[in-house]
Image 1 (spheres, one colour):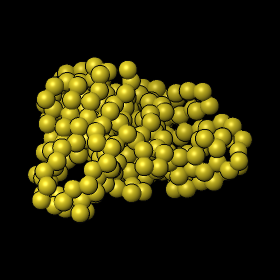
Image 2 (tube, chains in turn brown, orange):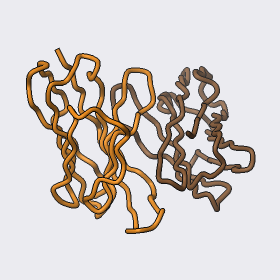
Image 3 (cartoon, one colour):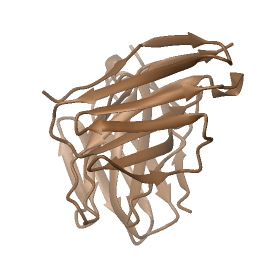
Length: 111
Length: 117
């Protein structure tokens, strides 16, 4: 079974900092990996999807990378803003169509 | 329209009640999902429908009964639930191609907050 771990579990940074969130998975037979944000008590908002054949995806201030060989994905957030405060979740889909979420990173950006 | 809608937003039910959760999307997606999320935990996959057929059931108790009446609708029927079933229930959808492992980006609804008394 795929195990997905996110480090750190919680992160607090001052506004304007660049930051990196990490996602590690145990099964390299990953089909794609998706990053989400979740505000308290709300649903998930898709941020970026990386297919297994890709190495990175960018959207605005966000950049996600995928290294299947090392079992890692990172989400880079540039020039963080208070509105970025949320829980960030990565989720990997394997070739058997199983979809596994990471444990999440709770981000607080301090004005 | 890139939205997944879920109703109701909140639901309180007793252990003997029968209720249903509803999910709807009009993005033409043919894969739809139910997840359960407890507080401060990641979502856990419950069911996957592909082309209106149940393709994945993650050993969910029979008191949860999914139904996919058409390509836009997904229901979750609830009966004889336990207090530990209280959680946020999330629906999602994605594109897929029949017979091929090509499930793509998932889009989530806002969830139904369920409380079982």
